[in-house]
Image (cartoon, rainbow, N blue to C red; front, top):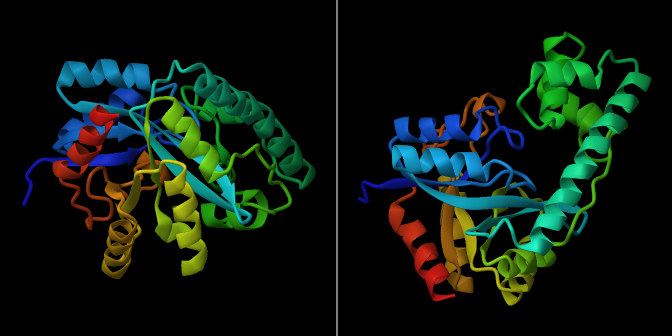
Length: 284
């Protein structure tokens, strides 16, 4: 068994994780990781800080991102590895997402207030001064102030998709995300297929479209997979001739049952998986 382990799907406080990028690298070191991909949602703002810390402590960092896209009225996530964050088109798209996030939060808080909740942007910023405010922060505030029983209820009743306080955000398609990642010099991977409510035919059709656009991998090893899920997605990757990626989807205390590198204790992501992506990237 490969003794070097990696984690190719991790979030920092630059999106909805609870560890700063540098603190995250320190945690990765403690967890015995040889390499880690920082894949914050629709932003690469944490990469510079993470890269400086990675160099200092001797961990290999993969500059990444996780795009939120839309397919058959479902949110589909696409991971990008080895991107050039200074590529103008990518930079502009991420700035567009960031700018909208600010106004989206304000509108969401306004709707929650109209529903009778006590919540302000000032309260959210005070609770998480060094973080990008996300729906996770909104949910945490409502639970910790005793206004809603638990976080799943907040999402299910108020701020999840199609709920009364949900604000739709601008999305791109999975194919558009793949093309943008490739244009920025990166490699595109379908994130956590286990989470999508697609039929097998729909999933295969989406994967084919994404592969035709240049996608090179599937996150077949993932914290929420059962052994049967993992076997299915490994076979799916093989049938499409795609590389296998693996990640915990670590978010710190926002997903307390998920640990770096091992997920719920069910993950083993050997370095050879990352090496395959590195080899492909070097050929490009």
